[in-house]
Image 1 (cartoon, one colour):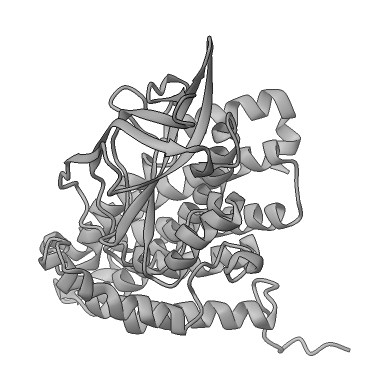
Image 2 (tube, rainbow, N blue to C red):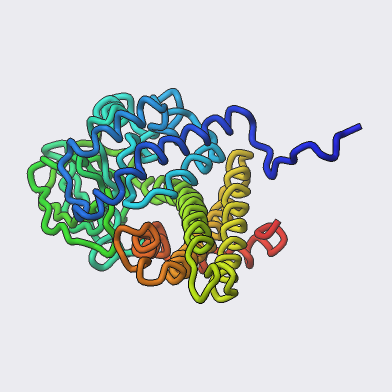
Length: 399
């Protein structure tokens, strides 16, 4: 007979998953959070040495390369385990989790030589790559990309030309995965090339500041006659759309997880402040105008976490990739929109203090806004979901 008084766990995580979750939480608490304000007040412009302790601590905690298979040097986490870690990463501001060594998921499709040159040193914290997709005239619609790669038969390589915006990377980024169209007669074949930042013809044309203060910068590059051999192609000619979409799905799940973690921290700080702050002879928490918005955000946070973890479990179960695409869009859409609402409410709870950059709520308010834009805007997620409802059925999309 079971003991009705025994504690009931709200989830079914295994002991190893709980250990991983606790390890990530301790890393964020002890390594990232203490450095947030310093990073913010420096405007995010810190020397490379500033982040080295973060990289070393992440490697020591075995939190690097989590999404990559063990056979290519990663941790081999399941998608659910990735979500558990990214929930913790999301509880820090400044995007300091970007300093954790790793590599884009598409690098697992690289050749052995490509992995030795790019992925392995990235996992050691010696290199880092960016993903160059967006262009001045191409954002949500990758079909409108105009950057090209033309085969030079005489030289036996390709000549790359184009302009890329929002080429996101940390201070040690020194190569890019660039999405271009290989020109083959009348055909334009979307293809991924690995290009080093010191390649002749590649130059950075701008490094603008953005709304958030983030570990990742988002500079602009021009490729003018950049030469790359066939050995620089990831996957194969014409495979960029499939490989990039695979990464998009993973990253949308990660964004949902980080937004969930951000909401948990925002709520914890809001409750702690509101239960101590006294105005008009009572705690401001006792005013419904303060506590009700917090309660609404708690419901949002719980829903976002459930959606994201459910999506991760489906991914691990090998669900139909097209259905997973829709599920990841639902998780990203809801979590990113809810997190921004939560940050707005918590800034209001803190009042004037919420407008100080030393306050985490103020930083989250600026930082969470981009989650509704990058890796597919909220409007793109709605299109994906709407099409899935029509093509795959309401019951499958919601089930």
